[in-house]
Amino acid sequence: MDLVLRVPHMPRAGETMLGQSLSQVPGGKGGNQAVSCARQGAAVSLLSCVGEDAYAEQLLAGLVADHIDVQHVQRSARDATGVAVISVDDSAQNQIVVVPGANLRLQVTEPVLRPLLQDADYVVLQFETPLQEVDQALRSARAVGCKTVLNPSPVQPLPDAWWPAIDVLVVNEAEATQLSGSPVDSPATAAQAARWLQAKGAGQVVVTLGSQGAVCCDTNTAAGVEAPAHWHRAPQVQAVDTTAAGDTFLGALTVQLASGASLDLATQWAIRAAGICVTRAGAQPSIPFHAEVATRTEASPWSPV
Image 1: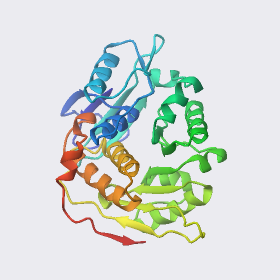
Image 2 (image 1 turned 90 degrees about the vertical axis):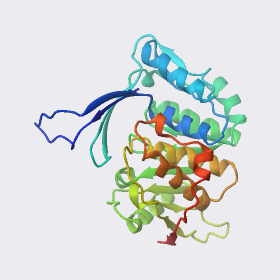
Image 3 (image 1 turned 60 degrees about the vertical axis):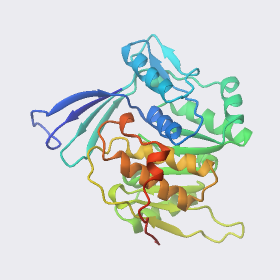
């Protein structure tokens, strides 16, 4: 669950300020990504863990309303449902502190995973759940031929054995910087980081750049020829809240790839979806439906980098 504080600016160390509002909004990376996939038209099953509290009931009710299969969502009597405290300032930028709570109690077993993955085109993974469960999902997906999408957020170093199991890696500037060890603040540096991540073993790589758009690098050709990196620009919008932009992008990208779109076309579509998302307040309430994205027909300029 997201607890969202609206503030005039981000407080400095030692500063006390008056907030403008406090709201409670359904969120969480896994939940947001599931909602984004579902609203783009995919059949979605969610594996996660929540507490036995009011937040859990509200979150599950919202997921069911989006036609998401929650039968594999586990319940923990020991921990509260995970919470994110999010500050959003007048420029629509945010700072987020996550208290994982019951998220860290998730236990993924092969008998549960295998039938789900056998019926799935893609599995989407992120780091608000225990890394050993992410590892299990990566290995199980590899075994049954299900493609993997990894969003390593909150960012942590990746074990070397994971890299070849990642079909699609999606990171923002900060995550790309931490993983590659080099500053990422422009399309050119994003392309350099993407190449570094591919050299580690990842397949397709997308680096999101906020209002600058995103850089995508496809996998190399069978002949070993390096695929070009492309910078896709974002439409200019009046941003209200960027909290769910990355999760919206990830879900839209994944569903487009599962539908057979190229990485470039999927990236363009995902940028449009995120562009709609940031014009609205709140995490899951801001995530657009497929039909809304389809109405956005503005040109999506791109260039090699």
